[in-house]
Image 1 (tube, helix red, strand yellow):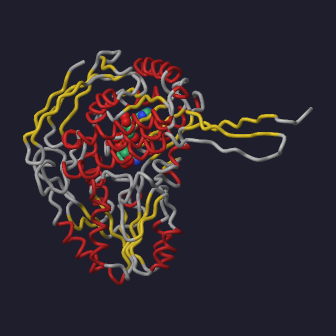
Image 2 (cartoon, protein in one colour):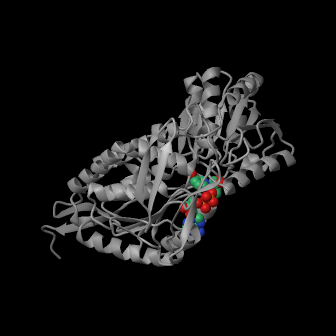
Image 3 (cartoon, protein in one colour):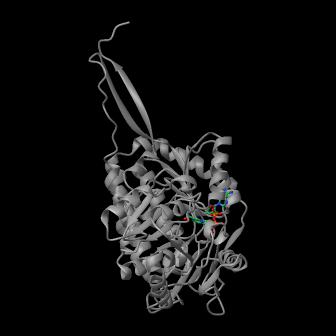
Length: 499
Ligand code: TXE
């Protein structure tokens, strides 16, 4: 399998990266079973970055066998918590050493700015691995008192070989969120990065080897959803599948799990998060956070605050200030200093977002600002705000996953709660008010797995994240994430109970 070399001669990062690519099984890079390749495209200019080996279903079978063998010999119940903790911590320290390089690869591959890749994606990935390193030697069950003639306790055992399927919006971060809890609890992994953004995961393969994980504990297979993703979801020897992506594919994963071996399923899916600004909010803060809410990561965030509800008394003032703030967003080369927003990830996503913008126009909404491409090459879209929207419009109902927000006027608490909760999604929500009762009462009534008060898009490795309703099943991060990766076994010991 080939080596990928790239020289970054940018103001943000002046350096070189060289790493092996390929289908990563048993600690080694190989060609895929079908010997085919995937083109990795630079979203800034639409040009080819490199070609990497494509994994297919046959590779999943090989990887699962390798992962099962290492589970039964060097990992799983055979690796102490202390060993798992120290390997995860070593991995985090290696990521810290290569912080700039990983950030540059992420920025190149995904199109997010180097600054955000470094300050958020890679830094948060390191925190996540460290956090789960801390748990690895603290996985324990309970003793349960029932009767003096019995001793009963539980063990939290690894599930076995787990499958993980991740998207392209936070490629390295999703990799870290997935492998952290799975490794801390002693599972072995077959993970599929997105075919659009495979590079940081492949760079991580070398770091996983360097940290000293037994070969085959983590297997990384870049391939397409219908082949590798589907093969993972329906595999008879994979005990659990964790998926982040669209609700559409989430349903397929669950169906495949049900039709095969009833493997455990956790899903982190889409959102259409409400961001509620009451008339007693700190206006400047609300404006700044609202812009961050929808335009962060070019709107390609599952928790993006894409429906901005503004109370009628401050609507005009908010809209004017929000527009002015949006005009300051600097769209351009993700490696150029001072740039806030790079390109969307792919031609496909660019087309989808432009399709939504067209549908908004056709359904009678007003493009208040933006609504068109930026520049002449690459997948850049101007930050866009729609007004004059109605609840049945596609741009109000569906996840756009781009820098496109809708601003909606509301009357009072009752009105906004009804509208905010009128969605199939329930991932996140935000409320802005300086009245603590109003803010907290609203936060508690919002149907969402995360509620932010006077902030948005705040995530932390220690804090659970996941969705209500069709935004998903299960929680990632925090102690809660560990429950997705262990089987609870109850052991009943008879002391003096005679039959
Ligand atoms: O997602 P997919 P796409 C949403 C967002 C976006 C839309 C489409 O609204 O516009 O989804 O994006 C793999 N069996 N989110 O098409 O297809 C695929 O290869 C198994 C929200 O890129 O869901 C990739 O690794 N796997 C989201 C992963 O699923 C399959 C993040 C996600 O891709 C598969 C991304 C199949 N049949 C998109 N088909 C979030 N929650 O953050 C595809 N995949």
